[in-house]
Length: 195
Length: 133
Image 1 (cartoon, rainbow over the protein chains, first blue to last red):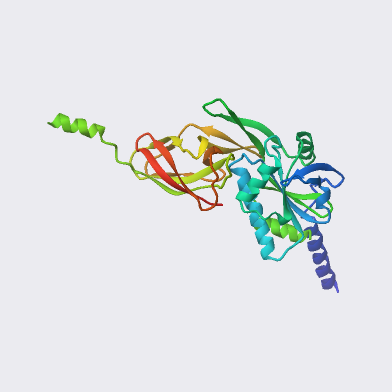
Image 2 (cartoon, each protein chain N blue to C red; image 1 turned 90 degrees about the vertical axis):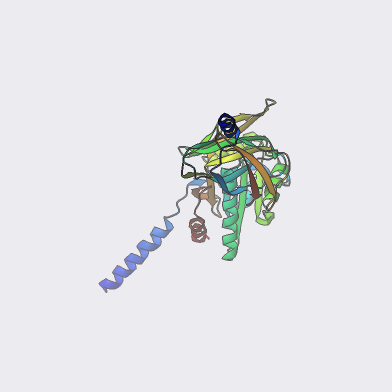
């Protein structure tokens, strides 16, 4: 009898341990932001994600190195989920450079990368709205390093958090990952945990 | 006669021990930015310095490096890259890259282009680059 109790105790510990693996990092469910997607359609964020699991990346399209890695990793996550027949996951890329990333720019960014937009939205919006989302999600981006062309035109880039976030069906951020070097297997397993 | 030969030798280009391997670039629409990656192999017994990159693909072409500041990531211009003798140097994602700022034409997967790398010892080396995801 003592042996049975011991086994039950171990099982309970394992199950509760698994549940605690993905604590709530940020609850953004009560927030309400108006953004636009790559087709200039209005999107209410995070409302439109409600009821779905979401993988969200932060990008600016003038970034040639880190943000394409993040976007490419999201494509790999999407492919892996499709391979495992896991549905109900939405993909979102939010631009933190709305001054330059207009909807048509985001659409071009997706097109050139052959991204299927069926369950993937590229979002932008008013600077103040994007700033509020950044603040809410503890994401940081500062315009910094600058290059100049021969005719004196200024090109600025950002120092920024390198991030992909996993959001659950209730609109809560369950885990943040380093977007450019994320372990695809890890996030796929985490998605399975919160399905 | 010997003087003439020595003089001619002086003006002959130095033998290049530099090889460029696995050059590729990211896709980009016209007006966007892209990055080029490759490996420089120096088989020579002297160091060589990559000091400039030329390309008509973009309005501005620079060498950049990605860096970490705490948990933040940024990138900055670098003026040159020294490749030590009998060693190699990788321009790779998340690290050094050739920054193509404001593409003058669209480059999509499978497209090919040429860029010019300028080395102090080995001179100009043309590199064929393919667009990959």
